[in-house]
Each structure stands twice: as C-alpha cells, then as structure tokens.
Amino acid sequence: MNFSLKVGVKGFVMSKIHHSIKSIINSNIPFMIGRFKQNSPIDIYLKYYGLEIGAIDYRYGFVNCCEEKIFVQSFKPTNPRAIVLVLHGYLDHTGSMSNLINFLVKNNYHVISYDLQGHGLSSGKRAFIESFDQYADVFMEVCETYIKPYAALPKYLIAHSTGAAISVEYLRRASSTFHHVILLAPLIRSYAWNLSKIGLNIMSPFVKELRRVFKVNSSNSEYLRFVRSDPLQHNKISIKWIKALSAWDKKIINYPKLEDSLLVIQGDRDKTVDWKYNLNFIRHKFPKSQIRIIKHGNHQLINENNRLVVSVLDCISEQFQQIDHVQS
Image (tube, rainbow, N blue to C red; front, side, top):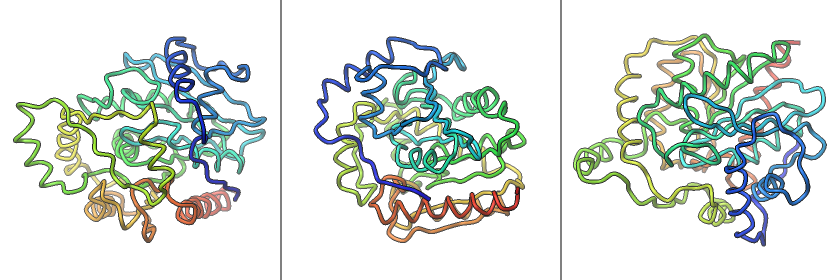
C-alpha cells in the first residue's frame, strides 16, 4: 500500500491558519459542501495539516448533533473498496490523523472523520466532557447518518486513544455497524493510573484545569514541534474530563464479554496510557481480539518516525487484505 509521511507544512504563516480556522468556525457551513477556491480558509486548513485531497470527492461542514456543532469531513476516492470511520484521541482532531487518512484514501478507501465535541473545529467547551456517554452519543449519530447508509460497502473503524475508548463504549451499546475495528493505543486507563486517582481526589475540590505538559509521545521530533504550535491543540486539561474517565473505568469493569473482532495496535514505549492493563482488559472483554505490539512505539503511533508509521500501516493493510479476501 502507498504511504508518504506528512507533518503539516514548513514555513506556514501562523496568522494565516489562525484566521482560516476562525473563518471556518464562524461560517457554520453545513456538511456536504465540497467546492472551494484555492487559498480559501478550508484550502489553507487542508494544506496546513497535510490532508491531500487531489482529485477525490472531498466534502466538509458542520452537523447539529447532541446540542453541538460537529465538524465532519469526507474523503471519497473513485469507486472505493470500503468506507472507514477514523476517530482521533483526546486533545487531537481530524488533522492529527492526516498520515492515516492520506494512506487510506490513496489505497482507495472512503474515509469519514469528525472532530470530537470540544476538539478541533467542533463546538463545545475545550477538552471538556461531563460523561463519556456524551462522546458515544455523538459517535452513534454519526454512524447512523454517515456510515450505515453505505449499505453496499464494507465498513471499518480505526480509532486512536480516547477515540478507541469511545469505540469500546459504542460496541457495548449496539450491534456493530463495522465489519472490523482497529484500535490504536487504546485508552482504558491512563498512565500511572493509581497515582493519578490520588492526585485527582486531592485536587478536584480546588482546581478545574491543569496546565498541559506536552509529552514526548513520539520519536518524530518534527511532529513534536508541530503539535506545540498547532492552533487546534488545547493547553489545558480539564479535571472534569479526568473524572469522567474515572467514572467510565468503574462502569466498564462490569461490561459483559463481546464477540466483536478487534485488532489492537500498541506501542511498547507508550507513557500516555496504561497499555499493559488496557491490553489485558481488552483481551478479557473481547476474546476474539488480536494484539500487535510495535517495538519502540510511543502513544502517537500514526505520528511516529517513518519506519514505525510504516509498521503500523502495514498492520492495518494486512488486516484489511485478510478481510477483503474473506469477503470476496
């Protein structure tokens, strides 16, 4: 399969992307608008985040969903072999997944992706959630409206970190829309979980937000520089979000085992999630799951150095080829 590493655009004028982001949000353009001019706000957004649309059918815009305005994007090549929902993690957005999206589109997969509420171009208090159920509610609406109608196409889901947690909640709620699910560095518990819970209990009566510390969550130094200046990243972490994760963790322990077939791709140097606990949890709750460990892989698997990103994409490619072979 084809792949070329992208990390934004070098030499980009930051005032240009800030203005473009503000213009897109203020426009409140409804989803399904696909035409735009060169150097328009959406064109600048796509170039800044390295999203390659070429000659494909590209559509974008806002949808009203669960009292929020959710920014949805569709990347559709000619005669796609399947449709893939791509979901980002906490503090990220669709632009953060450009390496994966470009790879899928170049290999003839129709990609749908959206920014979580409170993230990216979507509305909502930044990096905040009352309950993980709210994430799952939006996920279900997006699936019903933009994934299920493609009845003739196989349907896949690829979700990273918090996006993977949302996917687990979705699979528990509903019979899966997806023929296969791939979770990248899934979040069940965060790194140093027990210590974090102690800190949460001490601080939560007095503090609403914590200053974000940008972790070395990739061996790609260019990516690490880029994310620090990304205007769609947020520099605070909500205590309420951490409490919502803790409440979700208590709830999912009692979930029944599920028959869904999952592929989990996990780096062994991940210090964002408690990956060993998380893999054991997934093995127990999803007995049909497969685990692939990426040696030297950090949390941002799709934004790692070129060699590691290729390893991750090879895992995805092999999985899709197996499914395509079974279905043909």
